[in-house]
Amino acid sequence: MAAPQHDPHDASKMNGRLVAAVMAKDSHAVWECLGKADPNTSGPDGLPLLCTAVDGFDHKSTEALVDCGADPDVVLPDGTTPLLRAVDLGSPVMVEVTLGKDPRLRIPEAERKRLLGLARDWYETGEDEELRRRTGASGPATRRLVTDDEFTDIEEVSLGGLTVRAGHSGVLTVLERAFWILPPVAELVARAVPCRSKLHANWAAVRYALAFRKGPQAWSDLAALRHHPDPVHRRLLADVLWSRSLDDRPDTAQDAEFLAQWALDEPDGEVLADVLDAYKEHDHPAQEAIGLRHADHPDPRVRREVSYCLMQTPRSDAATAALLTLAQDPDSEVRCAAAQSLAHPSDLTPAVREGLLTLLRDPDPGVRRHAAASLSGSHDQTTAVMEALVALLDEEDQILRLEAAYALAVRDDPRTDWAYERVGPLGPGFEHDHRVYAHRSYTFRNRPDGT
Figure (cartoon, helix red, strand yellow):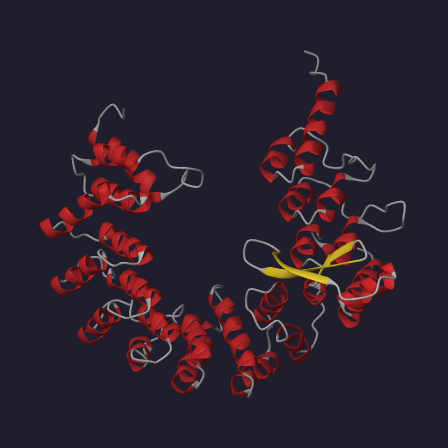
């Protein structure tokens, strides 16, 4: 049998759809097209379509194109490459996704130096001054805060018709990590602290780079930040240790002990909250004691983290009493944290049950949602809890109705189908929600034909 012939007309049509998807910044459509379309298709300007995605700061479409074979190193008519253009535009996430596989092995040394030099020139000159030099424009640049990816933000800088992002220090950090270059810890810290926010893309790039630095000298340099007089330096250290806690590393026990000692004497409330945020990710024997130590701290950010420190099981009577007090805190975020923590363990005591039922009537909708989630996920089937959950099916808030329906489903309550009808149609984003899946599981368990 002859092999099936590839239809060039179909390929051309799919390439056209891919161009339209990239132009529209529709990353879902880009992924769908890339099964059949050529990732190195040219855009409307004759350049590779990857350049269109890069120039539009569309990191999701860029990632899709590169993952499916678009060449980030192809030399363009002006002597640049798509990767060099990404570096020039100053978005750390754009550079991260444009780098592609094995950049250190793939990219020649001379090109690596060119990429690093461009990023460093922008960083040392500053975006405003470099834009003035390139455009000849005078006066101040226009700045606005934009999202760089789902987790970070950054300033977008415009002057003289050109727009870049103020992330060249982050770009430099991303490139160094990709090329296995280890600048001194102090140099990386100096790039992060001007940002002052853990949500800033430049800060996030440094946090990630420092989190995976190994060796006694790197740890010594990091640990010294604990006693830095500027709280921003200490916050950076706490954030680095938080990142390290998410990875299964041999030094997690060292980090946990370091954080436990730090939590005893950190004077700044914001820093202490970050320390506790990192510390609670570890399994450390002093966690409940440290949580209780700070249960009445004047900073609500600390009290919020205390709730999570007291989530460990088994929990002492003192910890339960502290959580019930935090459940009445004047700060709604503290009450939210208490509502989450009280449900551990899932077998509720009478006092905890009453505390969660009280939170279910809280004026803050966020608190009510967390209380509903804790009750629905518990093992409690007392009349008071079941009546309170069923009553949520009359709420305007759809999430509250969904939590109530979920509670009935996992308890095999015969009102489950009716409850999900009360929830109503759910929009995008719920396709893999555990509360939706619970209804399917209920149906499978209780209807032999699965209908």
